[in-house]
Amino acid sequence: MAAQLKTLLQAACEHVCPVPPAAGAVSAVRRRTAAVLADWSVCPRLVEDALLMVSELVTNAIVHARPPAVLRLSWVQGDGGRTLRIEVSDAGPALAAGGALDGIDPDEHGRGEAIVHALATRHGIRTHLGGVTRWAELVAP
Image 1 (cartoon, helix red, strand yellow):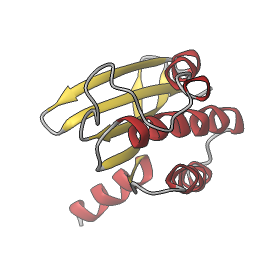
Image 2: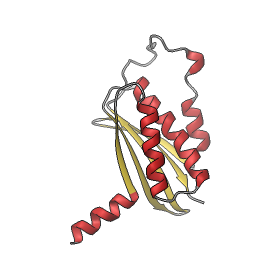
Image 3: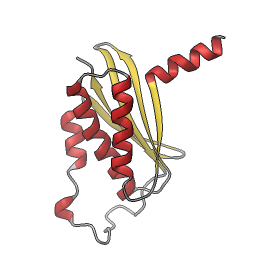
Image 4: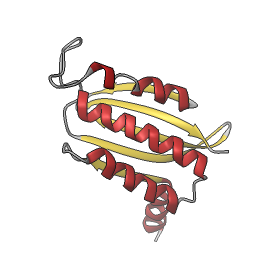
């Protein structure tokens, strides 16, 4: 009984979504995120910012990293109240630093990190044995 309750409580405050390394993955993950945030009754302003951050972090993982990638949404309790944490983990860089991506127009890319930094209450990058996790947090109003 206690294990079931723990699982239910965790599901209510955490969601994990694999990111398929395929065309259309960003929009599919974004739709799934929107559904989860709706189930959690997240306020619309926070949802808009979260969806934009999810799009940018997932795009970064697909374009610049090796699969597999995973999105994790979770609620954390902090000093300022409840905080939505968005994490995208991947298997690390696909190219050596400074490597060029074929077919990628540099004028159309490169602003995602700035967007995430502008929207997030806090953000960062954590390297670990399995790769890299980029995270951002939004404090709920």
